[in-house]
Amino acid sequence: MTANIVRTPRRPGKRIGLGAGMPWILPALILVFGMIYFSIGFTGYVSTLDWNGFILSPSENVGGDNYVAMFQDPIFWTALWHTAVFFVVTFTIQTAIGFSFAALLHSKIHLAPLYKVIIFIPTVLAPATMAPVFRSIFDADGQFNWLLDHVGLGALARPWLAEGATAMPVVMAVTVWQWTGLTFILFYAAMSQIDPQILEAARVDGASNFRMLRSIIWPLCSGTTLALATLGVIGALKTFDVPYLITKAGPNHATEFLGTYIYQTMVQEKHFGYAAAISVALLVIAIGGGVLMRVRLHKKEV
Amino acid sequence: MFELRSRWSRVGAQVLATIIVLPFLAALIAMVQGSFAGQGWGNYLKVFNTGVVPTYFLNSAIVAASTIAIVYVITMFAAFGFAKLRIRGKEVWFWLILAALAMPEAVLLTPLFVTASTFDIYNELIAVILPIAALQVPFTILLARGFFEAIPTELMDAGRVDGAGTFRVFWYIVLPLTRPIAGAIVVLTLLNAWNAYLLPMLMLNDPDKQVVTLLPSFFMSQYTNDQTGVLAAAVITAVPVIVAYLLLQRSFERGLSAGALK
Image (cartoon, rainbow over all chains, first blue to last red):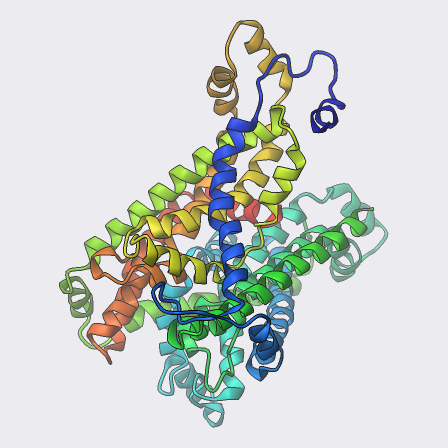
């Protein structure tokens, strides 16, 4: 049956005798199923256990208890809320900076190649490499407070990482620092694709540069914006390195994300069953988010 | 593309661009400057004196090279199969691979940790290589399939008429045409493997088996309060990546944008 479905779009002269494709995709299937689907199944199974993760230790089947506990766990909801706020803030700022910077670099400014390199370098560096740097910058006697002192804003100086109210903005700032270069490159490429004649026509009609940006270029870049939003959602759900290394997910869970919470529950507290239940929740959200975004993308295209 | 006619708007654009770029530069300067604070090059010496730097780099290189090799081979085979060959239930298989695309690595932690310790591959580089490759492959297959589909089937038919088998067609006709997409795949995989932190931290505890992203925290565990030495360690791990980027600017930019747009 399935073979017929595959053959239907066959055109004359196409696929002359090229053999069966299964052996070609088999290695990929083995890797993806062996690692990822196996992991999902295993995580699902462990999420019904009360277990400390050692093979030889006894485990007890507790059914849906871990999930019940999760829904009543304020830290789980905090982590989820952080993920949402984190996405909205970092996406908005990155888009604003990336888009403006792309437009500026399309305006024949000096040193453009150098500026491009500077803003893009952070995207190739590991968060783990940059974490000590940002810890030092935002330390109580770090460079950021030094800078505030020297521009007369010394009153604002504080231990940025140690205060609940400022730790999350720092985590967001580090993420923006790291990924704006990618946003910029994508907008830059999208703007290069715009037909110069459209812009010329608008200019003849007397549109200002700002007006063109808002009414022509921004709408024409909407595909890129949506792709970046999808990427941002996935990125926010994956957030681990930055909060783990810079703020240890604290102080007092102020920068807790799902990834850091899973890690802490599993590795530090050895509650494997509970960690697995949160992982399943993360998975459901990731797939749900992906599907939602895809549906929206399709609507936009139609 | 934009015409800035008045002098003031040109100056304004230049100033605005400079203001935007400054914070990005500032953190890099803070890193380098901090790494020389106090003892200057002595900080670097201290990092190298731990004796682990060559080992960490070698391990990272092994992880990156193996991951790239696995991802490249598997992706090219699969993309060719999906794009040009007959497969029962092709789209179902394709979607099953795609569904793994948005997978946060945290989801893999529980099983990986348990499996690795059960089968005793804990502290082996392969325990990091395989999961990174598995997380990468769905995406690169998606990327490469589109590229393979754009290669005219007539080209392959010509090869078939001359009596070449599927594999020879793939090897001699198709593969040489895929260089652009191969570049993107290699760069993306290289960055993801080289910059990976969570999986190596979890799976590699033995100092002989660790990778460059763990260098700053290793240093921290040896010299608790030595901030400048940690920054020197950060610079040491950052420099090769920055140099690679500067040498291969276009491939990096293309690879990463290809990575974002699918």
